[in-house]
Length: 278
Ligand code: C2E
Ligand code: MG
Ligand code: MG
Ligand code: MG
Image (cartoon, rainbow, N blue to C red; front, side, top):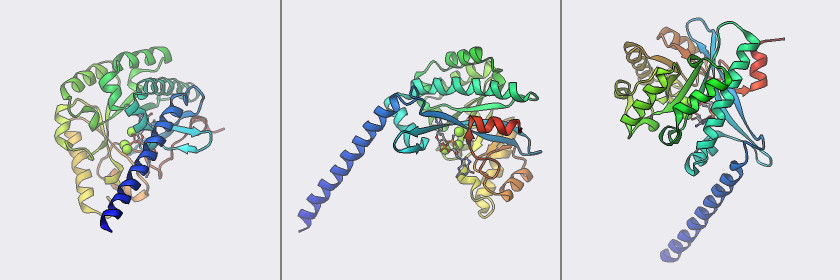
């Protein structure tokens, strides 16, 4: 009996696995032409200075409007793009579009230019000619280097820290700012800040989520802010969903914040309208 069940079980799992692989291959195939078909676009989520609530920039977040499946989240397709290598063409396209969009914001609004923050995948960092790509995008769009922020996750720099550090230094020399994204979720944690040259860290939203209730998360957030500041590093809090979280972050001297309470990611046109209300 058990043996039969085990056998069936095995068969069931392998069929489920086949289906998963098939779906993935299919997704990969569709993703290949998605940019050219105009199915991919960038949404922008505003980033605010905590001390006075002024909007200072926005993060570019990729969206895939699939013709039959509707909106597909980046958590579903970025991994696919990363694993099949498609990110190496997609990444530079995103970077370029974001630079041009940021120049358009400045044209329509004037005042202090907003920064645009672009997520860069580990693979772009490892295989790409990132400094050249960045330089091309800046030159062609006319965006000031200081207005471009690159967000890297810890996994992108772990393993090959010498290579990563050299690359990051090269990028930072041009004036581009480098941020460590989802900070606190990786293995290395705070010790990393001493070895990898970055301009800022983005505290992962899983920590911000509970700072009102969990003293440990608040303590950790406070410690990250203090340590970062002691090294001249800027701190962004991600995933601010409540006013109370924002107040607490202001009390703890956090520099920048983003989250649903402050503003959702919105399409370019909507973001533009936000900058220049009619
Ligand atoms: P991330 O860079 O950490 O981006 C923040 C994510 O948190 C975004 O999800 C954003 O919509 C979401 N978020 C913002 N505020 C809140 C909040 O208050 N509460 C909650 N629950 N969530 C909030 P999204 O857009 O689904 O992106 C997911 C991840 O996909 C990003 O995480 C980033 O790692 C990756 N990603 C997005 N666009 C790109 C891209 O162009 N290139 C690469 N390589 N990765 C990208
Ligand atoms: Mg990010
Ligand atoms: Mg993040
Ligand atoms: Mg994330």
